[in-house]
Amino acid sequence: MSEEENTQPQNTLGQTLAQARASRNISVDFIATQLKITPQQIERIEADDYLTLGPETFVRGYIKAYCRIVELNQDEVFALYVGHPVPEKSRRMKSFSRRTEKEANDSRLMWVSYAILALVIGSSIFWWWQTTSSSEITPSNNTVQTIELTQAETNDSAPESEMLADKLENTEVETAESALIVEPSVADLSVDKAENNSKASDGLSTIVMNFREESWVEIFDATSERIAFGVKKAGYRMTVAGKAPFSVVLVKHHAVDVTLDGQPVNLSHLQKNRLAKFKLPLTE
Image (cartoon, rainbow, N blue to C red; front, side, top):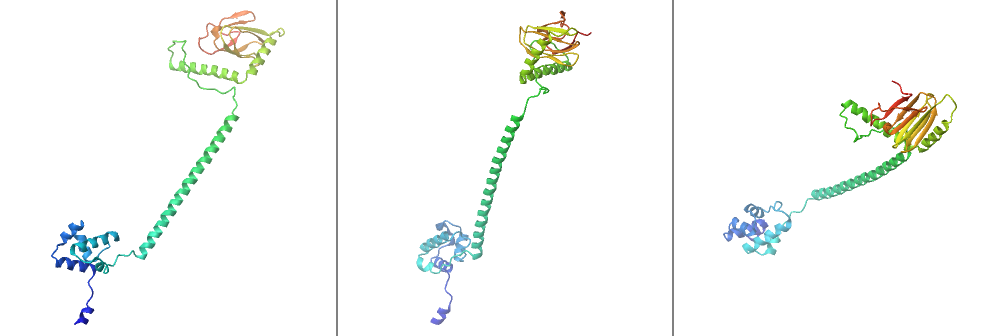
């Protein structure tokens, strides 16, 4: 009889807990309430299904509490406990996953570093190129700048096309004044040349201009030689000589008194507040 008992399989931990609960007439719901888990989880413990109950620490806590309720020796019960070891394949997969994640983070960090380095190098090259280009730019007399000017002295309500012409002519004035600032030495040479030409031989005509306000002037004679050029201060008297007819460009012509070979030149017919372009002698 004793040999038959020894050959009988030993109860598992779950079966031992279930038998102790049944012998004390305790329901599954009562155990679940005491352990603060669901009845389904109690049934899994009694079925030795620990894998779905969470970490092993929690499972051991549930078993200890269960033993206290049904008054079983914890050491004897835990002698029957078989934990749920992590499969070797799972451990390898986790290790591989961590290594892959670390390599991915390192790769992202490397590319971010490359991008920052490329941005710094590109910015340095652009700054150097911009600085070099700016230093090599030289002003030109033929540069035309488009500038919007407000004409405070005129109340003329001209058509849109006429207003556009005003802007273009005023732009030419600004361009000419800019050219003068770029090469002041040319203006000084022109003045000297004009004064010397005033003593020219017979056959040349003489222009005299008295500037009541600061103005800009450019004069070419019949041989296409520029005999006057530059900004003239208020009160300045300019005398030039050359072969007629002359091509004249004059700013603020209303503030300049002009004579040709001693005869006054009437410029009142030219429109005020515009760049004056005319021939001397005046033509109809």
